Image 1 (tube, rainbow, N blue to C red):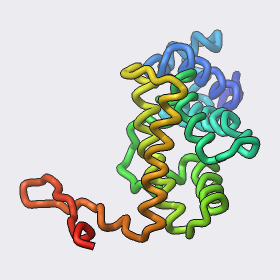
Image 2 (spheres, helix red, strand yellow):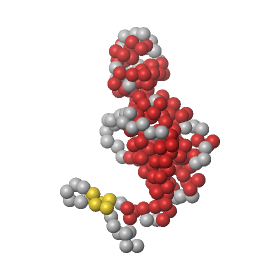
Image 3 (tube, one colour):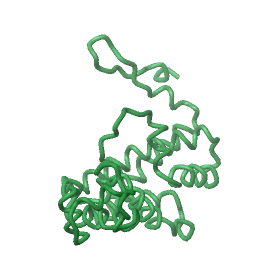
Image 4 (cartoon, rainbow, N blue to C red):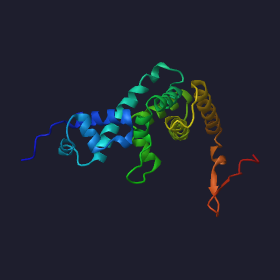
Length: 213
């Protein structure tokens, strides 16, 4: 008969989340987590198969916390920009949890769509807001969201890694400028004119088909 678990999955995941928040993902070891729980590492593995499973359970809790971080978006105008601002703010104030959520190597390479599906409600909420507030098609709203996600992630990663220190005004300006440019290109119907195509030496060459129009 297997031993009765000393801790529940939720208790272990919560302790793991606190450990990551305070000391970083690298500190999430069986020994450190056992010490945090006031026990040896053994009780962890009566509930989880590996520390990788523990990390992803902690990530699920972090994702719930992150979603609460921007849950008040309906009180702001423009609502989508508030979500972007909150993402960067989360990276500034909770850098270790941001790294746990968004800067972990995936066990297997996945498509960008698959990656976005792991973000909980953020992607669908954001696309819905863009369609509602800017009268875009589903396809264009998704394109705008995906491009803004990449840009916002870049700003957030710079902040989480303490590479740059942006003020709130600078963050708002950078997000606003990119969003405005993308919105204009999508509404013009000419965004594909600005695509880059691969060239033989492995670099990229800008498409010029729209320059003469």
